[in-house]
Length: 343
Image (cartoon, rainbow, N blue to C red; front, side):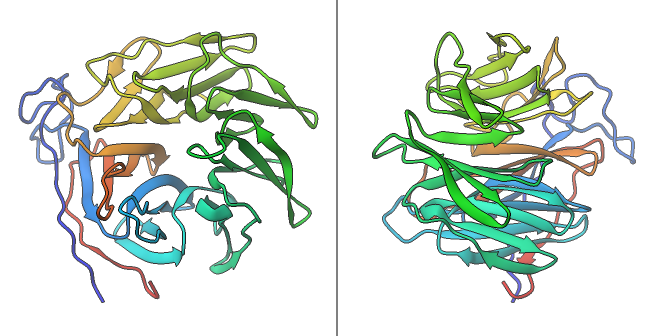
């Protein structure tokens, strides 16, 4: 069965003029100018999109219906192979919040109700852990250990960290004073807490103005960025000694941030509420203005030389859907969204 959704392409420039990117330098193969920022797909069925990861040439995104109207939640998986965008709905009975893997063909996806899916070369296993908490982040470390983090931000307000070692999951730390939302390398960030794993000990490295941090990623252990905020955007940088605040251009967003991506030698890319999608090169911000969508972006990821934003109607009851944003030097294209085989 094929499922067709409405797709939109944005041709508005970053300076608000049609067909310009704010610099006048972006041109497609036809010679016509366009903005490198676009809405790649919208109204994707199965729920809002919350995390992304590259499995070789394939981009994977996870999410689900959040059940804000009181209905049961489901998890979904979206695949993009460079030619086809497909949706696999109902891969589990809970919203999936994040995905990461050690190699092409192997990944872990985590979500509500302690759900953990582990896929190895197309064989998928349920490795859910015994907790009522939501797992918001997962990271496969270079040493082969897998970290899953989460908590209960609306109930106990406590966080927890799970560790997979030698093929078995166990609770590494529980009853932490704040939900842990993401993990990257040896960094763990959450609601008013920041930990760094030193040996097998969690050492606090809270910023001076403790804030809600949702995602962390860095170029090195002494060059780390974390994003979040409760009412305003928060972008923090760790230089190996202390955290400092990076001012976010309010032209790009005045809303809290949800996602960040960077890597050695790369710029910092952020995702946030009400269509926030932007790049910071260490000196200047680049973003579409006005926003090309008012849907909320939860994550940003680099894949195939482009940057991709995962989101949707994150806070809307009555059925969630997914939205994908894109930054590309190639002209935007329309795509047909279909059900993945077996989905």
